Each structure stands twice: as C-alpha cells, then as structure tokens.
Amino acid sequence: MKPKQLANVLTRILGLSLIAHGIPGLINSFYGWIQFASDNHASLLSNAGRESHYWMVVLYDLYPLVIGIALIVGSRWITEKLFKDEAE
Image 1 (cartoon, rainbow, N blue to C red):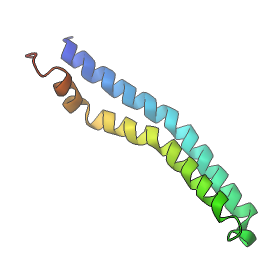
Image 2: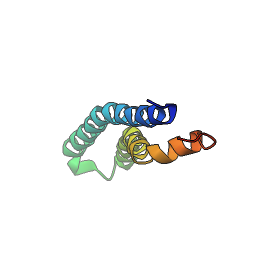
Image 3: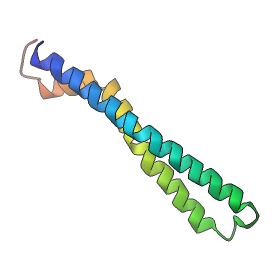
C-alpha cells in the first residue's frame, strides 16, 4: 500500500471515529433538550436563557459529526493536498 493510499484510509477512519464519538453525545443532548421542554412546557418563556443553553449543547455535540462527515467526503482532496508533490 502506498503512503498516499494509507493516508486516504486513515483520514476516513478518523472521520468514522469522530462520527462514532459524536452520535452518543448528540442523542444525549437531544434527550436532555426534550426532557427540559417537557418539564418546563408551561414556563418556557421564563426559561428562555436555559433553552438557548440546550441548543448550544446540541450544536456542540454536532461538531464532531460534521467534521467526521467532511473528513470522509473530502479524504481524497485532503490526501491530494498532503501529497501534492508525490506521484502515485
């Protein structure tokens, strides 16, 4: 296996790893947000600051998924940039 091919495979594995680490956190944060909404459905207006906190947690847990998908989709482009001087 050539170094360029190995780098492509390792980039995809890194992307899969980020996705695998991001999914449980995302599920947990969505569950927490749903729990918050069901517990405070009568007083959502008074807890508007806390609701935005839960959205920030969801977005924070969404970043690894987005980065992982970008690594998988763009692994060839990333490998080309890393090994632009080498011939395959």
